[in-house]
Amino acid sequence: NDGIVGDADTRILASMVRELQTQESTNNAGLYFLFGSGSNQYNQLLLRQSTKNDKKQHAETDASGEGDVDKLTEIILLAASARDHQSSKSVLPSIPRALYAGGGHSALLTQNNRLYLWGWNDYGQLGHVLISAQTTSPIPYLQKEDGTPMEVQNAALGHSHTLILEMSTRNVYAFGENNRGQCGILTNSQDNDASSTSFPIPVIPHQLKDVQCQSISAGVFHSLVITLTGYCISFGSSNFHQSNFGNPSAIIPPSNTAKVCTGWKPPDTKLVKAAAGQRHTLLLDEEGTVYTIGDNKHGQRGTVQSNRQDLIPTQVNLTNVVDIDCGWSHCIAAVRAVDGNGVAADIRLYGWGRNDKGQLGLGHFQPVKEPTPLVIFPEDTQQPKIRSWSCGSECTMILTEDGTVYGTGWNEHGNLGIGSDVKVEENVNRFTKIRGAQMPKLQEGQIMAAGGGQFITMLI
Image 1 (cartoon, rainbow, N blue to C red):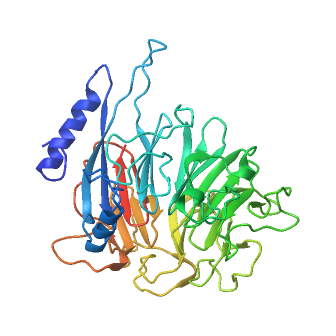
Image 2: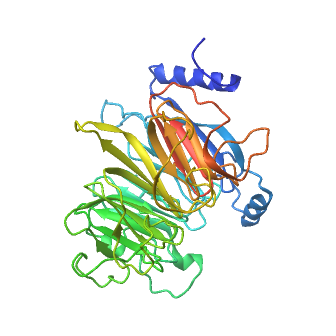
Image 3: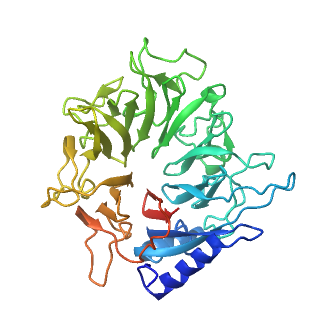
């Protein structure tokens, strides 16, 4: 018994992984499993062999549901290092370190800081001009205009645009759809066609050209950037004040683009992270306090008092928050409480906002106006320890320390991966264990990302 769970195909693939990861070869190759579920309309799960860029075919595929995967499905990515021709030393293997999922595109970031993007590319959100909207292997990595690799520290995938944070300069680049200014790029064109409102080549947003940044988030139609000085610079759609917010005492010095990008931070602390939804914004400061601004129709502001007329973010009643994430209209905050002896306890997740699809897994479909503890097993006082989590557009995925993934919320495309021979309801209001291919327990780490209609995960 080799300790590998799963079907025969899983065992064969696991054996291949073990052999490739232990052999001393010239290429020092390593094989890594990528798993996925949900919509594959634009090949965001890398399951389609065709490379035709046919919009009519896209429409037919979407209408018929063909390409949706309702159970976790195996995909293989080969990450092999190349030898450094400038020296006798070999380059470290391109081990995966992060996954990202957008409206219809997906991405993988490796430890040598290269970002690989695939899937929907109608607006150039993959960062290349000549890539089919149904990209298949080999997947090109992101490059600068001169053809050199873009060294990426972090990435954020919105509905149809992408942000990246460059490693060495800490500059932010944007590409993809810009019809609402979500790429922060000013144009003089009054046209509304894709050629004038999209940018397929990475460009630094106008007000960020001389700004060093630490965190980025791409929403449906707006973007958020946290600078090294702790300000949030926002651009894009602002019909609910989800971007372009601030006040005279806490705004970055004005410029000729002040109407497009503004900056804000709390008076006595610095921001460290942001999360962009569809019509609202979530912010986290260095002291563990959460702020929100934007639409509050579904309670996504985390307080019953806030409304769309607020011009500056307001506090949410939570402390000791260490991380935040949000979907279109629901929010998740991770809280690490401290006991009486000052010892940090386990992570506890709190959620609020829109819940009509069961996004929060609370057993009902009513909106949640204030932060509420999330539980995986409602009848059990002993909850599993949380390793990571990810908000999709209208779902939430949680990974526990034993490597099990649970999902709740919208499941129209099978993106929760809980399908079986029995019909599964489109919306699920309790965290449900993912089904399908079993992930062999060969690596210690696991990464995952939930997007518009897809879920991807990988052992590292």
